[in-house]
Amino acid sequence: MWHLSVPWWQFVARAVVVYAFLLVILRFTGRRQVGQLAPFDLVLLLVLSNTVQNAMNAGDNSLTAGLLLATSIIVLNSILALATWRSKRLENLVEGKPQVLIHDGRLNDRVLSRERITHHELMAALRAAGCAGPDEVRFAIIENNGRISVIPRERAS
View 1: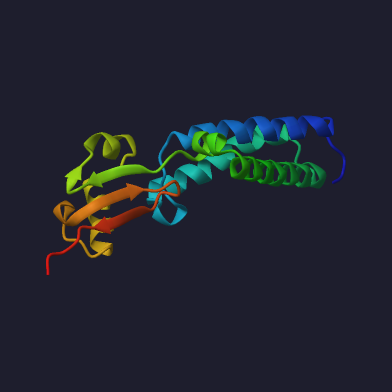
View 2: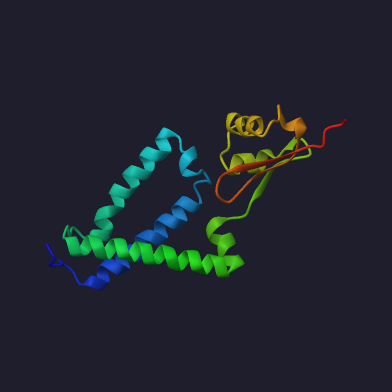
């Protein structure tokens, strides 16, 4: 239960490598929030976590290995959160920058395509903000967290 099959530092090194790899891969796959995940996105994350499990634990299913890996990942995440809080450059690299989807009623198709936002998703965000369509929008921006912020145009009185 407590005996490790490989030295403790290998678990930490494996956790660092897998964490960094997943961070890079997931950074380039879009900005959806957990609440916005389609069923296939959720299945992907679940299968992905199971896939990298053995890469991290080296086949060691001991309690010690599990606790060591969990601690390593939490510490890595805390370090990254602190580093991105302190460095705007690192924050932009890790989290990306907000991107303009609509400016003065004009869709930015290049950004929509790059961020993999469908017309239906965009229209749902506009309706949630009380806009019937792009022509009623001054700005629509996809934020770092995947949420779409909408600033309606001034309405004539």
